[in-house]
Amino acid sequence: MQNVSKEDYLSIIFKYCDSDSGIKPNLIAEKLNVTRAAVTDMLRKLAKENLISHAPYKSVKLTPQGKELALNIVRRHRIWETFLAKVVGLPWDKVHGEAEKLEHASSDELIDRLEEMCQFPKFDPHGAPIPDKTGMLPLLDGLMPLSALKDNQNGIVMRVDDSDNKLLRYL
Image (cartoon, rainbow, N blue to C red; front, side, top):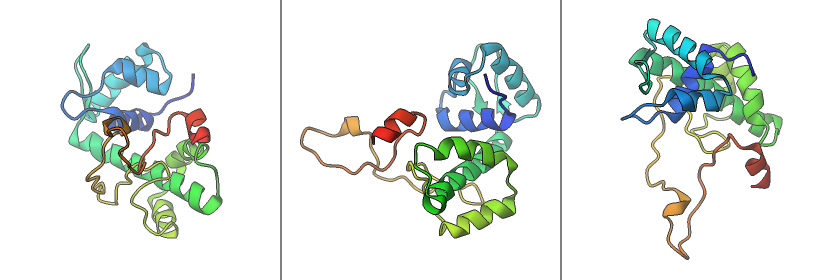
């Protein structure tokens, strides 16, 4: 198991949280590849810092303060992914892992410069929206899952899940 920071937790909660029902701690453990006990410990810490709202055996939701921090982390990650794909030329199945390492060690000034070098992208290489400096996400009007298309109906793939490197290599 890896060493997982509170930023990693906030990022996962943001990415997989349903705005109505939140995210179950079991899913957090699965996505971060950590034990349920580790999740329980971190959730206590995050709740104490007023970054999440959580009661034992219930779903987790970000507080406004937690959401602001999570959006900043997600922004850093997705800008790094874009820079690594567009400027460095790293394949899209490798940018996630590298961005994961770099997002924690980058200043706001560096992130702003990377964003500028990438010409202020609205979406990362996998199609995920990149929050702007104020935390606003670009609009995703008209998107639907491929499963919603009818037989012989055309569509354009705009976003793919970046958690499965094997699938990304295939695509």
